[in-house]
Length: 511
Image 1 (cartoon, rainbow, N blue to C red):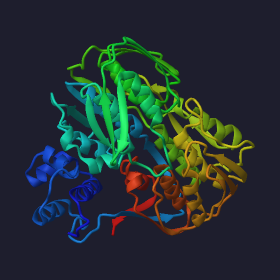
Image 2: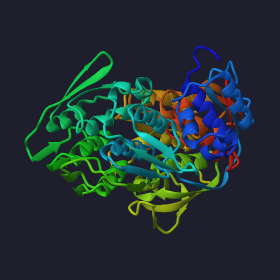
Image 3: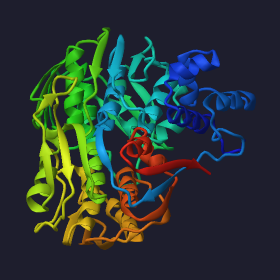
Image 4: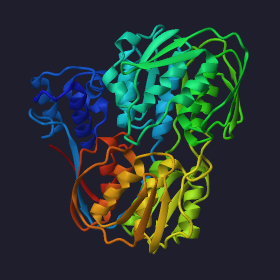
């Protein structure tokens, strides 16, 4: 093994190879005469492995990938120009999953998260949670995750490397403030999307006695006693994570907290539903004003919650159908969080699609439909396309409209006012044949239609732009290579295999 090889990188190799063989953790454990929890610990990077053990696992998986000398960098080789066909199910939400993992710290009992995605963002948070003492175990079929926090968390042993690779670590502030008066968290990481201030978090959490000093690569959090039984908080931005952090702090803060300018987005609604299972009373779910009646102490109960479906993944799959001129059915799509996107695509851009009758997600809350996309000749919309907080066009769905606009006839302006760098990442589409002009760090002019072509290129360091490049490669004739795609695995579970089931030709390989 090279010096760059780490238990975490070897664990990811083992996990990916296991999934390629279609095995659950329990089935691999049986082949190796060990336990499912041991396999989970290995795949999470929580165990150092000898070369002999690595070779034993490689033999069990019949995988040439887990061998000495591999750097562990995952790449994708795409044979483009093939139409997709069939049906694909929308997986559970990445953003809801990370919020629920953080919220599990509030419950002293057992928390079961059903249908949670096997993605890198989840893996990083699980590495952090297990490092501070939380017990985690996947079900035999790999679909459900059980978490049980100890009576006392050990923040001194927190996995700093894993924490720095996810911005979601900032959502530990709300829950931990209920159990500690002085603690540190590493600076948040995640996608490279420019400067994203944490000041709104600091402002809202100060109502619960938190003061935060940033220095030496950490947030140093001190919590003082607050006697008030009623808090009125106006969020300075309608952000998803700041709303979630505030909700988790309020959940076990005695008294009433009123949160105004709250995000009503899908992951916030999931979190509210979970907190109510813990006994927290929340009024106004799905609106911008939330009234939270907090608990006097942390609950100690067994709860089970089914994570809702991901509207961003559904939009990714709609885009895959459009860019490859395919007829494709996306099942279990959360329609409430896709209505604006579909209105723009259908009424303004000319996409033909059908919707099934609505039905409910496993959480009993989210409205789902099946969407069948038909091959269509798109036209550029007359107005610019820009995101807005829910119920507007989802901020995470905006990059897909760059690919869609490149497919359409005419010129489209994309205004990404939220992030500093994301629009710049979308210039990479030009290498695949698109005509994207950057007006400033937030605005793009895209001219179509595009004759997509193949290319060997490095993935941008941001999740949605990286997926946009992958989708464009599906349409380009010839062989493309997208290198270093870890960022895609942060938010998508086994995407190459699922696309291949529809007729794509996407081959993962390591260098």
